[in-house]
Image 1 (cartoon, rainbow over the protein chains, first blue to last red):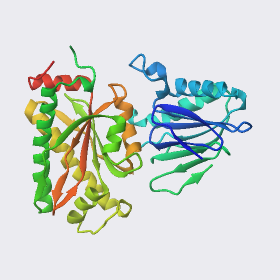
Image 2: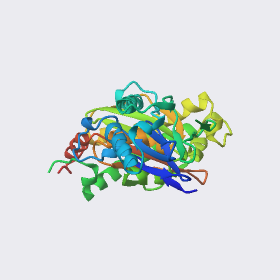
Image 3: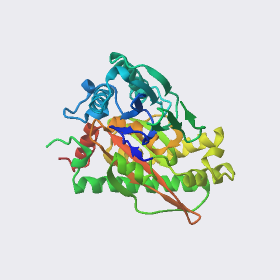
Image 4: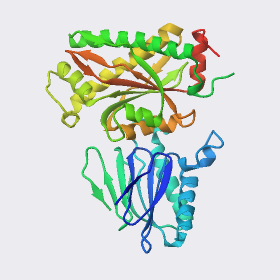
Length: 159
Length: 207
């Protein structure tokens, strides 16, 4: 069983028995997509909601919820699945610091964007561990589609 | 050429930031020393321009548990500052002040946390004051907001902000030595890019 690390603003896929991992999601959101039948897993680690709001043109498409999720779906479709076979589990989108400023509240906006994009593809979200105020590390097991969430000061959750 | 990204800073501008770091750290050390009643040694602060991944690595890795104290900066310079303290540094600063004997971040109570926010205030304020007094600018910092979590998750907050001005961040290593032990402390400064241009032109090292 190998572990494939997915960095910030990046994405990847794995087949049974490999595991996808992304570390220390703060306000970022980890999107785990899964085709149960062929045991194909995909994970994207997005940082910002919408690519249209980017100030740099030619910015990394994997940084945003809309373009990142779209790229992950097409990568998975090229590897034998189709969009109507996918289910989603999402984690992250925390507010790490308590402040009133909107820029620090990017976590909520990221989660909202991820949900909107997934619903536009009619991909059901079957598990969610989002919001609150703590960082999360995610492991996504291609063998069974389980998402494991580890936090610094809280017990591990498996959904 | 107008300054557009942090990585475009030239050597003179980086040296200027180091000098500000020097003055800020000197101020911070004497303030800390007087409230703690202890001798504090400082090394020459190390100013680095690092990308996101390297910054996280420098702080001990994505899942390293650290204290992050966030300040908003407003006025003639805008941006944010995060004071990052290692577990040893946080405990080493809280213990003499609160007459406590804690050795891990999980033992921190609410009083300890406020104490750390206040220390953050002193440290961050020393740097901002150094900039303000060198340039004659008016700069305010917000009330501190403290969190204890994985370094990677804490850094996602500035990452979102600095993704808009490039993938680099200014990291000032301002560790202190108290009772022969090093207290690892870092300041991450994320000024808006226009603010950096204003700062450098005030100091006569503009582009």
